[in-house]
Length: 93
Length: 294
Image (cartoon, rainbow over all chains, first blue to last red):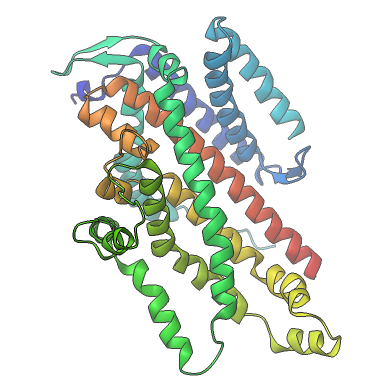
C-alpha cells in the first residue's frame, strides 16, 4: 500500500502510535474496571476517565501552542509541563 | 442467578460508521498533521521543518487579525441574533391562522443554500442594480460594500442575521410552546408583571433550547466561509477575511500547504475547545435543572 501521499514522518508516526496506545490502554482499563470511574472533581462537574484523558490531551496541545507563542525554551520543557498537567488532571479533575 | 448475556455483534453494526469516519476524518486529519511539520514544492516531495510553521503562524499579524475578525464576527452576531430571536419568538402568535404563516416565513431563509444567500445579498447591496444599495445611494447615504470595510461588515452581519435569526426564533418558539398554561395562570393570580413572567417562567424554560441555539450559531459563525466569500471575497483589502477564507487563500491560492496545515490544526483545536466548553456547560445546566425540578 502506497502511503507516500500522506507524507509520513517518524515523529508524527510516533505521535499517532502514542495516541493509539493511549486509546488501547483506556479500553483495557475500561474492560478491567468498567464504569469509567465517574467523580466530581475540582471543576465541579462529573468526569469519567475518558473525559480526563480528553482534557489532558486538549490542554497539552494548548500548553504547547502557548509555549511556542510566549517562551523561547525548548519544546521538550512544554512536554514536561504537559505531563505534570495531565497527572494533575487525573488526580483532581 | 441468570448470567448476563453479552452480545458482541453490535461491534459489526458500528464498523461501517467507523470506516466512514476513518476515511473522511481521521486519515485526512493525520495527513494534515504530517503536512504541518513539513514543507513541499509539489511533486510529493516533503522537507522536514519541525515546529517552524506553528511558530511563524502564532507570531504572524495575518493570523492574529483573521482570528480577531472571526471572534468579533461571532460575538457580534450572537449579541444580535439571540436577543432578537427571543423577542420575535415572544411576539409570535400561539394559536390561530398566524402560527403556520409565521412558522413558514421564519423557515424560508433557512432553506436557502449558503452560496445563494451570498449571491442574493451581493446583488441586493450593489449600488448600480441592487435594491438596497440603490435605495441607500438615492437617500444620500454613502454605502459601497466593495470599497468601505464598515459597509462590508454591516452587509455580512445583516445578511447573517437575516439568514440565521429564524433558527433561534424556531428553537425559542418550541421552548415557549412547551410551557404549560398553569404557569401563566399562577403568574396572573400572583399579579406578576410581564417582565417577571419572562424572567421567572419563560427564560428558565427556554434555557436548554437557548443553549443549543447559542452552540449552533457560535459554531456555524465561527466556521463561516461561503457567504462572505461570495459577497466580498474577503475584501475590501483583508477586512472581511475570516479564518476559513484565509485558510483557503493560504492552502489553495498560495499553495502553502505547510502553514495552512498548521493553521487548520490551531483552528481545529480552538473549535474543539469551545465545543467541549459549550457541551460541558450545556449538559451540566441540564442536570442541575433536572435535579432542581426533582
